[in-house]
Structures are given as structure tokens and as C-alpha cells.
Amino acid sequence: MAADASDQAPSYIDYESFLDPDFSPTAFANSLVIATNNPSDTPIDLSTPLSRVLFDIQEIDTHIHTLTTKSAIPLLAHTKEQADAGQQIVSEVEAQVASLTDGYERLHKEVIQRHEEADQVRIAVERLWETVKTGRAVARCLTMGRQLETQMSEMGGGTGVGSVKKEGHRAMIRAANTLVSIRQLLSASGSGEEGEHLSKVDLITYLQNAIVGPSESSLRNRAQQIIREFSMSSLAPSSNAPTTYAQSEETKSRTTSAVVTLQLLNPRLLLAALQAYLRTSLTSSLASITRALDNLSTLDRTLLEVAARCQNIVAIESLLDTIKPPQTSLPDSQEEIKEQSKNLLEPLLVALDTSSLPSFFWRSLAEGLAPRVSNLMARGGVSARALKTQKDRVRDSVRDCVLRGSQGPGGSKGVSGWEREAAVMVGSVIGSLGR
Image (cartoon, rainbow, N blue to C red; front, top):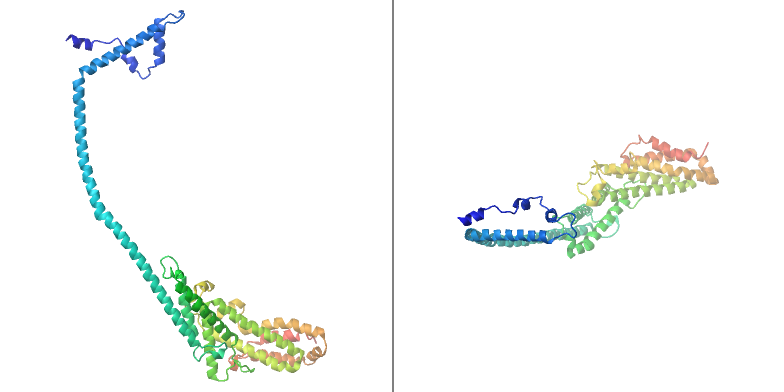
């Protein structure tokens, strides 16, 4: 009882001050120094406040020792209970961790490993599919290459128009379509497309260099040559002009094949070939008329040749008007035709900015002829006097040339509707002769 009373006796140490959140060691030390010294003392005695602090510390230490000694058994029991509880928790957790580990290993074996194996199979299948797809594309490309060789052989050899085998010109269109198919396959090189890996195959590179390229060049040259040598008029003698109905139909059929072939290969090639044909006719006609005006004895024959050239232009215009654009073309030429035309004549008329090819021919010829006649008259001499003397004859001959040439081969078109072109041509020649 005495011990319990002494334990419960109040302590002289002010624990509340030490436990105060605002406790300041410096302020506490200063208060001890002031309490044990007078303000006027010199020097200040620090041993007394230091003994006071040491005594308080010893008192607190004794109090802690007493409390821990008295509560040792409950503290140890409590600690043992907490340790036992923690050990039990650890045992339970270890069992759960072991179960989770076993489950993970089972899942890794049954799912992850199988997934990894399946993923390897997937990669192998994808690569096999790419190989099969590339092989099919190569086989298709080689088949079309062989087909192209056969079609080129069907066209016949030689360089002249007559060297093309009879009906062989029809193989030109088939060869052009085959070229279109090959180009489309080779251009489909995007991811997942049929021709994605064809550029890496040496055999395809050889096919392009040895067969496709030369065949396309030969086909283009043959078609351009057929258009360049096109002739339907019988007014003037020509080695290419047909003499019978069957020959005329063969010429039309051969030219149609050439036109469609160039359109398939590239619409720009067709426009260039037709413009070159018109330009050649204009250049030849301008030069020959200029020479004939300088020597009127050759005027009638020259105007007959010019009329024949215009009849050929009328014939090719009629032919183009009946040919519909093919449905396919090479990828690099698809952008050239934004709107599908009804026939192959329309793009040419648009490019030349004219309503008809004969009108373009006569007006362009008149435009180039006027300054030449002026130069001829400016030089004077026998030729200039002969032109003035035979002005009426020249007028009638030029007018008759325009009307005859605008009729087309065999008079397929009437003479009406060409008076303006005749007037323009007559004016370009007679206008410089004066009265």
C-alpha cells in the first residue's frame, strides 16, 4: 500500500510544461538561470541551474525505470501476444502466397507458354501467307509476261505499217491491256497489297527490263507509226492510201487499234501522236503551197495534195468520234482524264481549242500562209506578177481545195458549212495581192 501511495504521489516535475507543443528549451534554460541568480551578480552562477536540470533528468529516469519494472510482465505478455498474432498472420499470408504462386505457375504453363507457342505459330503462318501471296503474284506476273510475248509475236515483225500481220493489229490492244494489268499489279506495292514484295524479286526485275519495257516501247512506236502514216484519201497518190473498200476498212481497223493502244498506255501519248500528225500535215501543206505560189505551174497538183491531207484529217476525226475511251489505263495516266469523255475526239478538240479538226487545219494554215504570201509579194519579180495576173484562178483553186478537202474521202461530208474556212484561206492568199 505504501508503495502504491508513493507511486501515485504527485511529482514536483512539471510534465505539462515539457509536453506543451510551444515548449522552448532556450526559454526554460533562461528561466532557471534567472531563478538562481540575481541580475546584479557578476559572474553568473551556472552550476546551480545545471544541477537542477541534472536532478530533474535523474528523477525522470528513475520514474521511467520504476514504471517499466512494475509493468515488465504485462509489456512482455502484450509483446508476446502481438508477436504470436503477427506470426499467425505471416503463416496465413505465406499460405496464400504459395497458393498464388502455384496458380501463377499453372497459368504460365497453361496460358502464357501456350500463347507464346501460338504467337510463334501465328508469325510462321503470316510469313507463309506472305510467301504464298508473293508467289502467286510472281506466277501471275510471269503468266502475263508470257502472254505479252505471245501477243507481241502475233503483231508480226518489221518496222513498216504493212509489216503488221493481217488482223495482227488486234493483238496490239490485247498486248496493251496485258501491259496495263502488269503495271497495275506492279504498282500495287502498298502494305497488304498483292504486289507488295514484287520489287524485291529478281525475276520480276528481269521481266520488267527484258520483256515489259521493250514490249511497251515497241508497242508505242508501232502505234505512233500507224497514226503517223494514216491515209484514206485517193486524191493524191500515196503508198499508204487504200485502193479498195476492204483496204479502207483494214486501214480504219488498224488505226483504231493504234489509237486505243496509245490511249491504254497513256492518254498523253495519244494526244501527242494526233497533234504531231496535224502538225506534220500543216507544215508540209504550208511549205508546198508556198512553193506552188512561187511557181504556179505546180499549184493544182499541190492543192490536190493539200486537199488530200485535209481529207485524211476529216477521216481521222470521224474515226475518233466513233471510238469510245477504254475502261482501263495505266496508273500514271489515270489523272490525265478527270472526266470520262464520250469519245476520243473530245480530248483532242479541247487540247486544240477548236470545234473541228478541218477547221483547225484550214485556219492554222491560213494563219501561217498570210505572212509568206506577203513576203513573196514584197520580193516582187515574175512570181509576184503571175500571182496578180492569175488572181482569179488562184482564188478559185484555193476555194475548191478547201471545199474538196473538207468533204472527206469519197465525199463523205457535204461541201456546205465550210464557206468560212474557204473565205479565210482565200483571204490569206488574195488579201496580200491587192487590186
